[in-house]
Length: 312
Image (tube, rainbow, N blue to C red; front, side, top):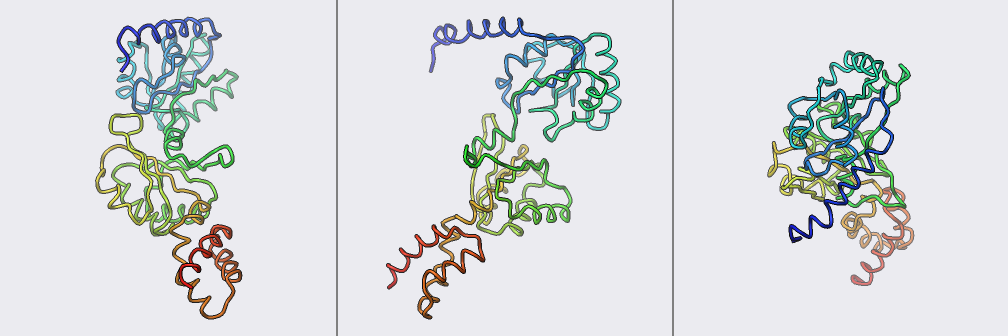
């Protein structure tokens, strides 16, 4: 653990220098600043976001009670207006009036980045259409944080599909899951604590017992947990234990990951051995299985060679 003096020497002067540098950057008036805030750990706010919020004339927030936790912690005392999803049009007009007077205005959501499955798009579109500049101040995002913890994207396969919140009604949920069953990239979604069990049960029905899922909860907080398992194990592994505790990020691994899963490949063992005993060639068997299931032909061949050598 760093001593207090070493901590002070290493960090504090650098933070002060960084804030000084940020203050010298361009912060024009009559601009709407879209500011990302922490998703749980208040220490995750950026220095640029802190400086930005401190020089604003007005801050539009999703919920004043939630935002004041952050603002009180950092001593940010500004005029706030509520900008939830039902008041965006009205708020957009108010913001433009402020901008026309030369004021700086910030827009924040309760947690994370505005517009990312949060309010803000109507305000931003209106403000831009009125000819005012919009400047994003980036920061925390539950989507990218969960993907970082899951470790299932890389520079060769960087894609993912973020779908926002899982539909609340079961018919819509099942329809959405069926439509995205065969995605070759991870499917990232949010879900609320009181629906997570039902959602995982529906995911099991549509994606099957062997599909991998990563569930992230309490991200950046003391009890953060990121867990990866097959859908067939969702009850014992996760859902019942944490029911009604915090929102979830749900990541369904890609169909490509699923098709290359060792347990899935191993599920064909009995079929392979039976067909070989019936006189079919191993290469023909592999071609048929790979074509009908999408399993990697090379991985299936490697597995089958070991299987046959053990059983012949």
